[in-house]
Length: 88
Image (cartoon, rainbow, N blue to C red):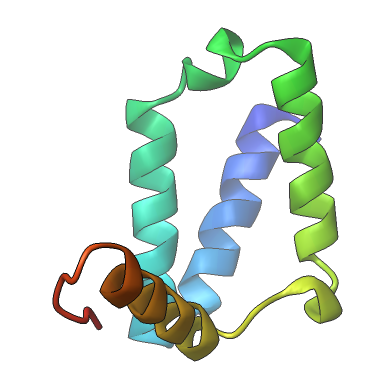
């Protein structure tokens, strides 16, 4: 697929998204990618491989942790380690 075809496909996919939260997330990802485009090139081969493996693993829902659980554990850790107020 050519660059032009890829762009058209991406535009088509974006046009089909109705959920604002998904659009915001996509916007954040694209903005981050644009502003840190060269970040990938600064990583070692081992770091790149590790990230690629993590991305693949994240495609399996069994490997994911719900946001609520992460926030609960983070708040518990924060309260034990530093006495900071809870976030979230």
